[in-house]
Length: 397
View 1 (cartoon, rainbow, N blue to C red):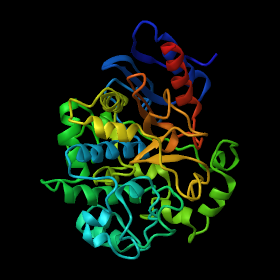
View 2: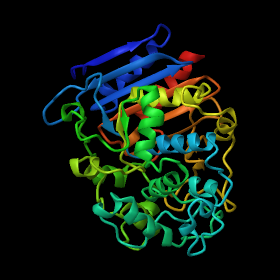
View 3: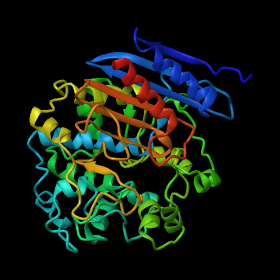
View 4: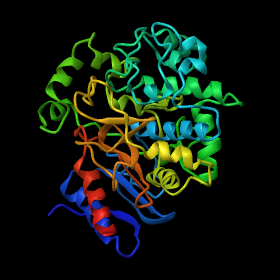
């Protein structure tokens, strides 16, 4: 019999089933190392971690182990822009060019902040080739993305802005914030510090390296042959250098997801995909958004907008980049026909490459998060994450 991997942490009475499913992830679902946290009405009721943080060394995943969460970072960026909205600096329905005049090029004059954050702006790809040095410096990348022309008529479709979204968000925030801070700076000072979050959009230079989990990729073959992976048409498009899929995911040329998990990428601000932190931090942030946002100053009007249904593109919810139906709104993913989470469509969150997931459920007053270092291959509803979410809602009744 396969030995049971170590699982540590606690669950409050009534949430034992979440711990059982967390343990089953290791024995039955191929988990390597992971953490799960649930904050209910401001009180932590699940805080679990287990497995190993490094497959090569066998070092255990510990209470303060932090891990790269890829696009789950986008939810924290959206929360930062929501705070800017609450402070009156940003109106989701005004044109981006009102805040950033240089953006009004190439047919982008009328694109609203809402359309951009809902990935309907047609800006998923950047035509000029980018390198690490360019994306690390806002004053270098912002003129490039300001010149980019939309790949489709804004508002007609949405297409996943896998890497580009964070750079556009950063450009807007730097212009509306009176202190002209970047996303990582603003998030650290206005959200992470007051909530005591161990989450970083740019990893500090003095961050202890022995706290970091090491990402392990599943390889190419499982992606090609797994029935719940990306649609075949999407994968074939990704092999063609000039396709929208390929250009949306590979500029700068990060050829494999595990490549971002390296010191050179951790040292720069990559707001769409470079966040590193704990499950505890993500659940705490979303709990704040699910229960009123008073500690960071989120206003009721802003939260009502985040909880509202997504405004779909004029030509349907099938994503031009991902190849399946999904709903985006104000920088978050919303529950839809295929991807369901939370108690209702009032929930909002974001998931990342490999299976990490975090969201706010205002109906239940829940902040949920799951992070891991073994990348999965499901396009949505990774069984490890879904088993935890399903167990949680059975416990909640």
